[in-house]
Length: 450
Image (cartoon, rainbow, N blue to C red):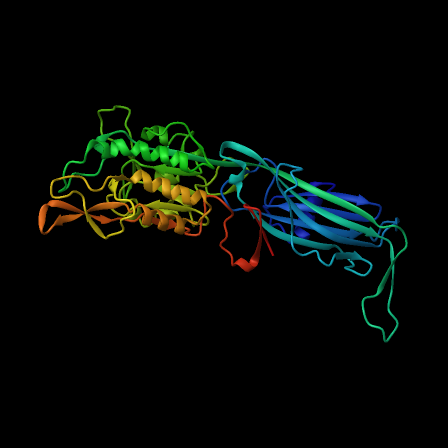
């Protein structure tokens, strides 16, 4: 495009932009043929995150009627493709809608002939990054320029009119590339303090290896390893001031908390190791994070939140507080006091914590649930499926009651992790909320909408 105003008007003419939309175009004029391709809703050095980054690819062709050059009188749009990843990688994906060719000029549209298609990709294929991993998106169109005469078939013959080339056709490709910065980063907060474990209530002493202060760092390590398409921010035990600082929550697009929690928020360490922990309210968390998955500034949304803490899902406004209207965003949380001990594969509603001799029967750890949940997410499943599978394979437990027939034995009830937000959200692979008939998928990370 010759100037910014012309670029905007071109995108506007295709119905691709509103007053604030980004639109990058590449324009080529050959004699009296005006060829353009565009990418809308993304721009160079745009920060993107998550598995649902949207764009629109557009193409337009016009015979310039006021141009004294009459070299061409027909332009055919034969191909519109998307290239994702490194420029020149060859990862080309055809955008549906150019067969048969779209025609401008003789035998076609008197004005611009145009086509636009929506696409979506998973930014995590660029790898985990805090500062932004470069990711190139290219839209490429192929035009055939022709000077033709069109002869109608004599009546009563039927069929398309005969097109005669008056000079050799010219095939021309035009492409536009946007290079974005893919940010996918994980903030973890855990504790080594025994004091932050579940309250004693009417239960026996928890063996040291199952104390919350022992298992919390293990869960944090499992979360970091499991969310393998995210770069972990430094550290996993933070004070309240540190976790709310500019280099923590504002840089995170995923968050795991294995510290204490409740309906009002989560906890963090104090600088004084002998002091009790501090609380962080949900609103304080919300005030430190962005609300966009594509932004000109480094202010990006949380996409995945893993709350391996007590009672966090009791807060009814959890999803809206963390995400705004949750689209492709999800939090996993518990509704009661969750314990570190479980029995893998045992989905019985209530099971004894020990036998009659006091021998511990629940020898599995909640860490296994973290590994199972993140493993399913990294396999590309939805949040709903990942939670259901982890709950089935490693059912979490909470204290239920004393066994009526033997009060010395405590019964532990099931406590499935629950979902707050968009149950269709994936942490890997493209977000697919629409009906299957509306998109065409390519590879493992790109969707083109019909």
